[in-house]
Length: 336
Image 1 (cartoon, helix red, strand yellow):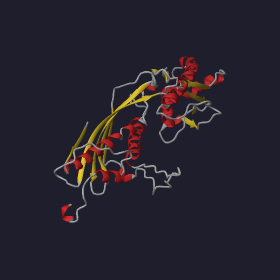
Image 2: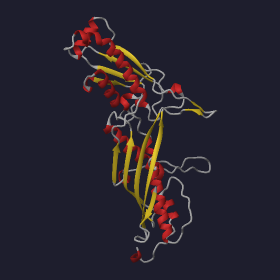
Image 3: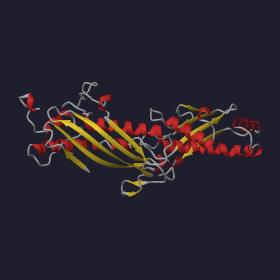
Image 4: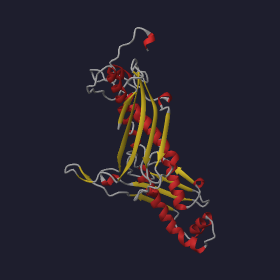
């Protein structure tokens, strides 16, 4: 749904609004890639060390894996530590991408923790009033292994690229965004006034992290849609040498008002604690900025009597917005 408005009230400032949904497939279309690995060690002081096959790059993966282990072992998060990813502990790992790492590595951590829980169960039944550390020491004295590897194998999808048959995704992450923008028809500058986002991400492992991922993903997509213009010379050389030639979103580019809502009571079966992948899906919602800008441009064109269709390419930079707005620069400043 798109709306343009303000045609008669403001000659040189126009607004547009757009609502865009997203349906993002989670999981690799090649079956063997859908696997994670984990290695869990428990020490006599009750501390737990986790190594998993995912790479932490600021998306909160380590935090989520600590939460998964804490919930599986029923111990405080303060007892759990992360060992950085390495092929000496978790070989042959799948790449950390496609918003699926929490599913793969979380399932692997959960698998390893369940193996350890099974080994500890006899000691817990023998001393039900005991504490975590006492059970660990009892297991050690009985020569029970306090180390376990885990493998996560969520989904069973397989996509045949030649025949076009099968299922490419384990499940889908859904969402929608409503974005309102304002453009300056004389300069092509614009501002995102407000964005409201609703996401279905199952039972979130960490709502704080996931809301941050949704906000960050949207703003990154906004930069792709409106700023990140890659220019190449006739000889094939990339002309961008830094922030002067290649723009990314800054603090002032964040929507003036931004609200994110996570749907509740919508568990996702077959995943780690009914969660869903999040990160890349909201990036696609930034298309709402592009559609809203088109509607603002359309309002400007209708103001001067142009109702024909028009094309504007992504990234929709200030130069392109100005070129698409057929208004003349007034010679008298009182006309503005």
